[in-house]
Length: 85
Image (cartoon, rainbow, N blue to C red; front, side):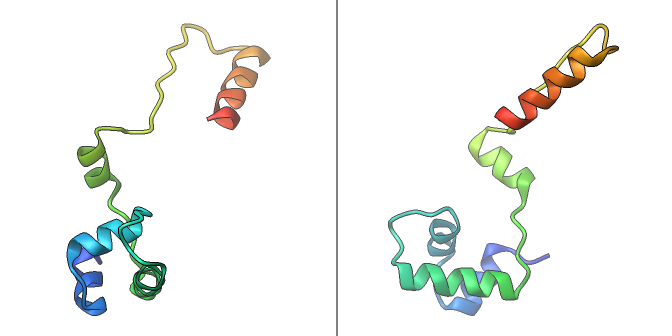
């Protein structure tokens, strides 16, 4: 599995610079961001969602508890939630 350390090594930049670039920080020039993104794509980099969740303390998951999920209403409700979020 490719990580930001691998991208940093290939790009010749720090791990922090790679992190800033991948997260869209203005601390990185557009030229450097494009180079890092190109390398990330070449290496088939996939962000580690578990690590991101630990760092940000946000799961982007919403739980819905239904006592009865029969009928069209709940399906429509859940579809609406999915589209809205």
